Amino acid sequence: MANEINTITKLENKLIQANSLIISERPTSKDYAFVHTILCQVGLPRSKVEGEKFERKNGKASLLVTAGSIWDGNKFVQQGVPYGTFARLVLAYLSSYAVKFKTKEINIGRSTREFLSKINTLDDGRNYQALWKQVTALAACRIQLGYETATYNGQPIATFDAWVTTNDKMESLWPGVITLSSDFYNTLSAAAVPIDFRAYLTLKKSALQMDIYTMLVHRLFRIEGKPIFIPWQAVKNQFGQEYKTAKDFKRAFVDALKAALIVYPQAKVEVVNGGLQLSPSPPPISKM
Image 1 (tube, rainbow, N blue to C red):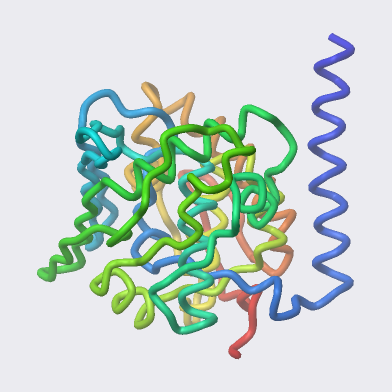
Image 2 (tube, rainbow, N blue to C red):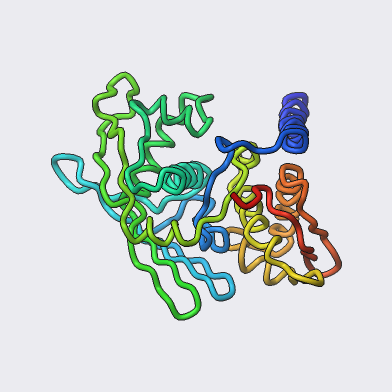
């Protein structure tokens, strides 16, 4: 019980400290990050997917992720569907670098360790394996994005020189550069949502919190006039695919929403009878 209390206190303190920093210090250019607009509406899976396909829908937007294979120098090796917090952090870093520097070629550092430091996850040796797994899954997968009647087909990563070990000492095996596909880069350039990376990193232990945060950033500043109401069923359609019951989802969602709102203090969101009420709110990153 003592360990559980300490863990909860540590997480709460982390959120409180981030809230204080975000309120007191305006984000600088190094805090700007970017996420693809459709991925703010229909995120990647949050937990491991059994099988080779994952589909999520939300209103007019849809996402279909199909696992692929990578060539390791001797054979093609089947990868899984990218999922979880690491996949989100990697995509956010790649997208942010591409938008900031207007390039498809992303510098990911000289080693696994250096890249982990770039996404602020250099705190556990197990993260080397997790990073390797999600980068290779992203490099191999095919992502189809749909909006209304338009369909985007492609891979987010065009070329990736795969390494065959997660041993950080073998730096020569780390690719150093990842090249985004032209299609992904072009749609990203046209539809990137700016987020505060300080907030995103604070939520990095929970993919649900990260998804709620990006949804709110994408949606709240677009609301004009009166608040809008979203019934629980619509919220579950967007975020609850991994939950067996509506009760389990609602409990998890409300807890995750509280965390997201702590690091997005400008957000005006209320849990009301039957669903959520969203009111017009300023974005965490003002127009640049």
